[in-house]
Amino acid sequence: MVYPRQILYTKNILSFFQLNKKKNVKSNIDKFQTIFCKVFKTKKVLPIAMGRLGIYFACKEISDKSRNEIILSPFTIFDIVNMILSSNSKPVFCDIERNSNHLSLSSIKKKITKKTAAVIITHYETINPEIKKIYLFCKRNKIKVINDLAISIDSKLNRSYLYKYSDFSIYSFGFYKFVSSMYGGSIFVRNSKTLLKIKSKILKYPNYNLFDLFGQITKFILINFLLQKIIFNYFIFPIFRFGFFYDLNFINKFSKNDPNPYIDFKINKNLFKNLNISQINNIEESLRGLEKQRLVRKKNFNIYKKNLDNLNITLDYNEKLQGRSSFINFTILCKNKKNLKKYLMSKGFDLSQYFYRDCSSLKFFKKYGSNMINTKLHVKKLLFLPTHHKIPPDYVKKLSLAICKFYEKKSI
Ligand SMILES: Cc1ncc(COP(=O)(O)O)c(C=O)c1O
Image 1 (cartoon, rainbow, N blue to C red):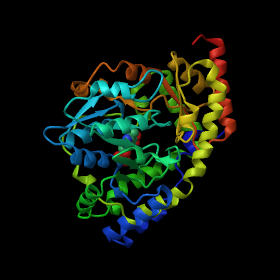
Image 2 (cartoon, rainbow, N blue to C red):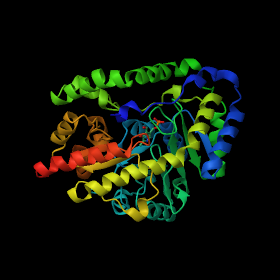
Image 3 (cartoon, rainbow, N blue to C red):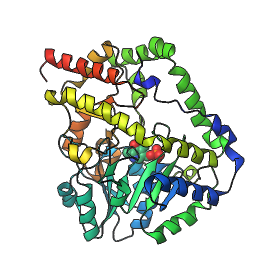
Image 4 (cartoon, rainbow, N blue to C red):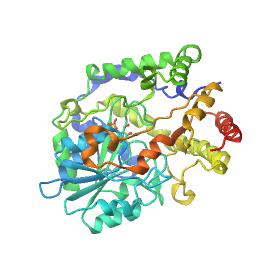
């Protein structure tokens, strides 16, 4: 049996030991623009230290004293909210739709005031089904659209990559991403003057060096070691299963991707770095397999859909619009999630019940909008199933059938 977590990280990191071969920031940016353009057909992008920095840059450019409100879904990582605050803008939370990950135009409209400067649209395993409508509405009303494509770099709508429906788009090349380079991100900027302005800023930053990346590289080696089949099967997975069965928070928190949220009004200066040539080469390499991998994930996604549709626990996926999404996982919303997860874990399936938190329920963010009923419910019921391109369809089928079996015995 191959477990999803065993195969999530397989990149060869040795190339990172040749970090400082070239220090020329400008030529690195040029190279990045060329390789990005080959796939995405635009050169209006810049490599940046992390995806979140793109939110900071975009908000800095958009906001001023009279218009500084940035509407966003609370279903995201807390760092995004902090980036908005660090840019002197004000986050305004907007609830997602029921039975969906996404914001709708009608709910966005309710949050718009004279001070609205921009809307951040986060795309998940599927694209926001109203992105075109939202973009056109915002354009007419002089509100900027920032697409958060951190986990959906390869999603398309009508044959166009999603940056086309935005003024700014951000991408992440972080540790867990499909296009990964330890740390890294990129920003698409529609306006050429603004693009040059941001470029002139980043030209002054130094490249990431081995010291900056040392922590990530060590983590990478350690994780790869712990994910070795025998170590994972007989040591790591049983610990996590034990933690989950007996509700042991000190173990369970390791399965969260942001276990210790905080509020921060100041940008961390460590973000003012540039990607070095090895990171850019790594991105080039990962981009090559992008579409092929997306198609494998789509296949896995459709196996879940086919098998689980009748159970009434799948999201409202619109096949016509969502056919070119990133499909990075398959989300189900179930009432008795804990029991389902226990059942699946007892059958040897490793699942994550944690995707994003409801940022509006964090005490220190409450003043930016609370009572996001749909998001709250969503987070409570959500379980996500792996679609990774290295997961064989057979595993996906077995997992789907185990879920069906669970619901045969229990009412949903
Ligand atoms: C939805 C979303 N937006 C933004 C980011 C930020 O990306 P980065 O970690 O490169 O800053 C992430 C990271 O996981 C994310 O999941």
